[in-house]
Amino acid sequence: MYNLDMDKYCASCGRIIEKRKMSEVNWQEMKYCSQTCRVEKLEKSKLGTLLENEIMALLIERGAQKSICPSEVVRKLFPENWHDKMEEVRRAARRLVHRKLIIITQKNLIVDVNVKGPIRLKLKVP
Ligand SMILES: [Zn+2]
Image 1 (cartoon, helix red, strand yellow):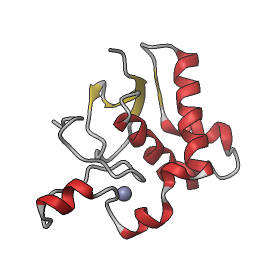
Image 2 (spheres, rainbow, N blue to C red):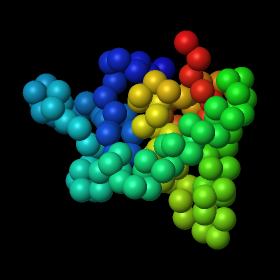
Image 3 (tube, rainbow, N blue to C red):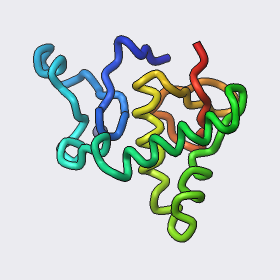
Image 4 (cartoon, protein in one colour):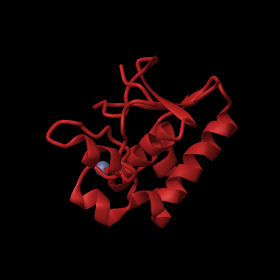
């Protein structure tokens, strides 16, 4: 199980950054998991922000106990080509986990952000 305070997340794609192959100092300063993420800076992109906001809006509208599928968010925003945006919305969801706003679940269990396969999103209730 992951630990929100111990693990390090990529600021762009929200994946957990592996500590291996790095000096302690480099790891402390590391913000992105890859060169691509460093260049794209999704957390600062228009689409990234739009997706984060839409996830939060939909979750709040649904209520604390309910979950949503990330595809609902992109289907609503991009009815024509929502499928192309699935990875983007998953990245936005991971960033929101990092900010302790939501949790990711799979078969009703909380899972870590690097999980593969279908996921659902829920508001994080203290
Ligand atoms: Zn990344």
